[in-house]
View (tube, rainbow, N blue to C red):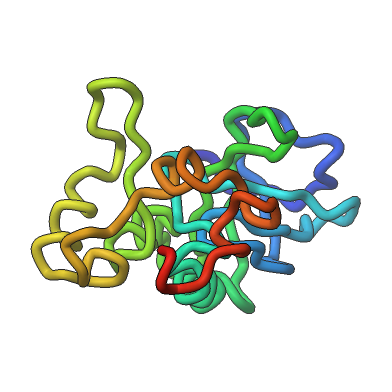
Length: 170
């Protein structure tokens, strides 16, 4: 991998790493970053994982875990694509130690490895270890994946979502 260059996000070439600093953490798999080279902030979604929704049990601790991993850190960001919401799907590594932030979230038990059909996902080993150790959301055997939660309740902030449900209804 070539060293990341500080460059404005408008000039980012897909697949080429660039340096940024974390800004606002939205939830356990989405955050805003400020490119070190200037330019506009960019909203990123960590590629390869799915973290609990904000209104889902485990959502707040997942967000806090991502904040702990990235706050104040220089980050190597590599954008791979955009999702249907316009967020950049990216891999993010901390510069100081090379930690893959998505792998860290799954290893701590605060995210699932994204599955595509029958494929287990990039971080399936980390997920299996977190499940076996009962870390994070996997501390309970009935942890509901974010995809299943969204299917049953809709996105956060809607009348159907978990935000409108009491803990007894969940």
